[in-house]
Amino acid sequence: MGRKRVIDQEQILDAAEQVVARDGAARLTLEAVAEQAGISKASVLYDFKSKQALIAAVVARAVRKDNAFNDSVTEDLGDVSSPVIRGRIAAAAQPLPEEFRATALNLCAALAQDRELRATVQNNQTAVVKKMLDTAEYPRGAMLAYLALEGLKLLEAMDLYHLPAKQRKQVLADISALVEPE
Image (cartoon, rainbow, N blue to C red; front, top):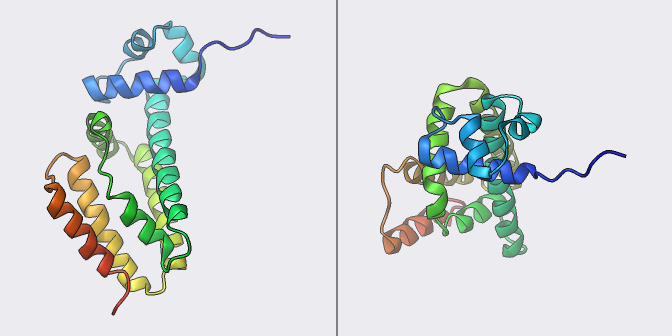
């Protein structure tokens, strides 16, 4: 029987996120991640064979967490029309957490430079759009709402523009109005 694994992959990914936030994905090193996690570089390499594999795992985890959050908010809405887009709009009422903003910005930069990393997000977006359109009572309005919502979120993630809270709430209400015609 082998030894029980002491180092958790989530611990390594947490450390990698912290390094990405501090130094950027381009300057991330396996040594810096190991130091941040308080483990050896060999331990990082055991699970993530390269810097690229580690960054890909950080992106994949961010996508999974975002999907889980959106799905949870959607479930909490109960039985509503066009649930996927309505859930995403409701989820957007909570802006990107401050502690994740630097990570998100630096991951966006990494995505812009790496086709394989982008593919993870592209595939997720394709699946979300399909699910949204399949559940929308008015697909055209749902798509317009989705594009407006994702534009708002991207501006925030790229740290290009942040609406004041009151205005943000009104914009989300306006986006929600696009979902279905009156």
